[in-house]
Image (cartoon, rainbow, N blue to C red; front, side, top):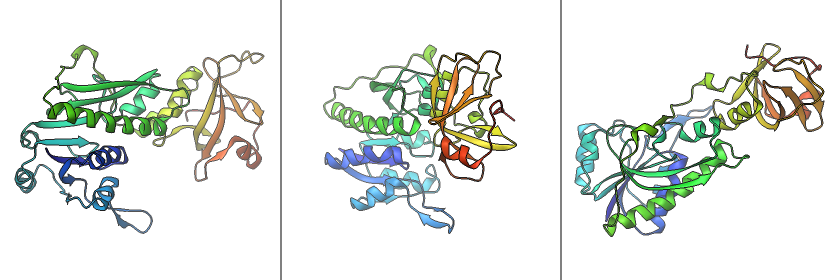
Length: 314
């Protein structure tokens, strides 16, 4: 079976590695063009290109995947299957029609929940107890294709978006191999998604990370975990933006009646205790605008902090 792999980001790497490890014939790897990065603007390859190059695979990096030149190139590969994982460009129907069988995609959610660009982040922000990976047949409508395989895993209370992404990208690689085996054996089944269960997961905006201290501590805790690494959950302190990087929920707050949301209740060895709409949040690590990430203890040592001061939206 000839496979063309489309992928660019860190999330796609285990899937490509699984294809290589299982000796599938990868005719080409399609990835985003090299981009200038860093202070000195050196050209940098995608994570997927690095893996493909090390494996000696042919790499194709079109600026526009849906151009006539790209379509001609892909047709000449005579692929049976297109595998698309975090590629970064939307494929036109003319591309999806090229493989002899079909095009498949790995999506990091339990579809039809969390269709869109940020399913991992939103699953955590919304307080989901579980998520998973779905392998779908690609159609023009985003994340709407019929499902071939799906697997659920729990979201642990300590999981943030970075940790959960690593779990899901590895799970996705496993499901990809299982899916391809079912396609080879012609045992696969296509299950239409339930349109009534659709939940969208749009790309995060910077403002999505703004903390509303009037919300319950559990919701703020989930926001902090779900907004890592970007945009980061943030508040404001003495006119400066303050990113909140690691927290702990304190559901019961005794002896602090009448306190305002966002108010610093106590300065502890393990963090700053801050009032929320329900319960409190223990801030363990943070980063002040223009500074480095640090523990709350380090922050207190470098700043004059008084009990009763408040973190605010702005």
